[in-house]
Image (cartoon, rainbow, N blue to C red):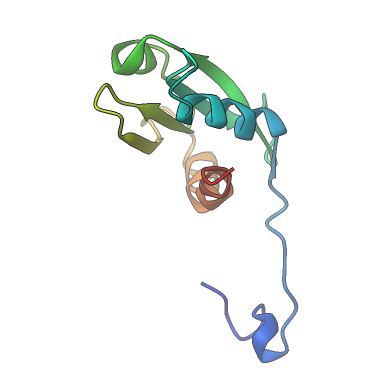
Amino acid sequence: MPTLLTDPRSGGTAKSSGVKVDQSVAQTWSQVRDDSTPTNWLIASFDGNSKTDVTVVASGSGGLEECSSKLLDVACYGGIRLANGRFVTFFMSRRAVRPCRGSSIDVQKWSFECTRGM
């Protein structure tokens, strides 16, 4: 939610979160949404130790079971095309994730949401 200090409509300066979502996330999500491709899930997370670069860390065609088996011990986003044709997006953070890292990715999840329409 913008504040008076950051909302350009009130004279504030728009500020970027600094998060850079790699183009591979949008490309893979397009494949997940396309019924003619076998890819039906993806998991995206920060690239290595980066605090700003989000990239695809796993994708596949094995559905919910395969996707859940590939979940990492790091905070991540994901999307799945279900057998009934519906799409589900998720954010996951295990207890093993450092609190600062988990809250950082939680705040930035809108960056992943922006790729959904691509």
